Length: 302
Image (cartoon, rainbow, N blue to C red):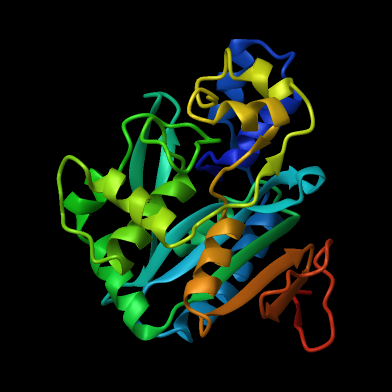
């Protein structure tokens, strides 16, 4: 079984780290999927079942759900891709998200079942999922906007950049789309067909959204952006580019914004390493390597 993943900043950084590759190699990276063995499929499905149990306990409103991507510990990044999840009338959970359609070279919206979302994790032997439960009013308003498909599509940028600058209309990445949905929902913004994204970004600035910069650490990203179709730098302020510190919307920056705005929000992180699953509650991340701490729930799949 093979799953295509949605690209986000970690994919961009990984390509940047291998900037000596050719353009055709970068496209192959973009389209690559993860082929799972039978045992890996079994672990992933059982992991998804634990995630579903946690979602079921969150009620019927929307939640924010994120998954890990490539190993980017050197950049201090664990989660790469966020979606808005909701429970359908049937009881099944779906995740609405932006993904980059590599063959079309454009962003799309995609509704995905929970198992598929969880199986989109790049490393089948070590994976993390984060769920943020919102206060009921915030969850319902976000759900209402997220399921308004025409409006959700009006918030979809025309051009994709995995490392998009949050306050530019030139590009958009998967997490930025979720963030702008939050702005429309919580700012009660009018449904302006032409300036909806602009209004969302203005509201975010007024709400003091200010993501922590990602330290790139080398000029590899600058070089990679010249031939990789989903990397761009022309939307970032010049000072940030020279300092090799780019402000990008990541799941961690969205979670920090939610925590600041709604202090009563709750977070649960679930990880699996081989046959062990750890369920951790709270804003402090699980220790690297998916090791349980005091108070965490540990589940063995053996």
